[in-house]
Image (cartoon, rainbow over all chains, first blue to last red; front, side):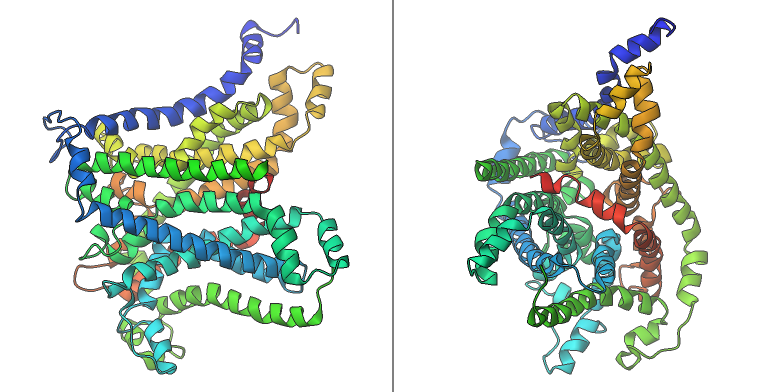
Length: 299
Length: 271
């Protein structure tokens, strides 16, 4: 390249980092400093205003939070319940629907469109939509129950029904995501193992259990991983249906909602940072557990 | 393999149930947006009612929604374009030079809960007098779209053969020239996928705008809450607002569903 200017040659030789560095720098700048600061704040009694003087108090926040059976541990429980139950139904239903869609059929295109609609819908709008449907007095849900002779349910308004109802909304919105991922996995499988099993006289269930499912397992884990991370962090649906603090009895207050409230409703920056650091550790630990299983499955 | 008749009947019934349960709530929302609040409260008017455009009148005129629509469009568009500018070359480099550890830095952004970044961001950006302006909203939405774009484009570049670029090098192009003149044009389907999904995720994003937007820079998902009062809810207005937010991207989704599906499932089948 004799006629290229010097800077162009330099750029060409260093393109590996020239291309990658801006994006990495952008994300790192928006992550590293905040995380370090959150870690620092979690060791102080910062509250009221981020600008105000705060004192270094070591691990006292951590002791306070970890011994808080009033808000913190119930929030951990709700986060685990929300994520666990939602994931379970999303994977089971998602697998069933993906299997239904696996082989070609008439009207396939319309079913795919229907599956895409909840996925692209704005989550807060979805929350509001269900809030109307589940309204105890005017909602469609209770009207439908009355047609079949069941009494009205409080749904989102009830202290014990609110969390299951929000889980239902999450399942409605995100099962399609699992369907798409599993369907992509199914279509990439080759037909031969299936056919071999069929010749051997295996029933449909046996073929699913012993041929399809093991082959599909890596994709299932990817779906669980992607959905799990987002389910742990659910915020929009809970905020739209129950507002600040997860409702007056904190009935849908997950870790994310709790930390948001501590930060932006009560300005308890020290405590909220502690909750966030613990929350972050929980997410990393769950991811690590899942990816470890994934590697094991590969062997 | 052709399924048996029994299964095909069962499948047809099951799929009708699935489609209805996914679509019916959305139709209910749209229907309510054309009802007066009196009709929404009247269960005998559930299916048969006189449609009215009053709710949309409220949304578009009184509630200043046109401004919020423009805000949402601008933030999602700017965040998408800037993220593509940063993300596409980065994904290319990470895919070609196998920089998986560097890619992890960018993908970390998908894992960290947004709240843990918001307090420090709010502090820094309010000191810079940026809170309530568009720049901080666009930056925060880029934080959502950039990792998405890098993830999708890395998968796309992984699937693109090296040979075409090598041929271009033999023909006398530089590496960067080959990227610009050969690889980029071939990547247009991937870039479209990444761009569409980035736009949708940015359009739908709620938490960052909730904290970082001001009265004039509010995006649609935040503006929805204008219809929720402490004592009562203007259901008709609220459903019109939610319809205004969701309908545009649903229509986009109908036309470009192939791209959305390939983006959402990017990398899923490689295990």
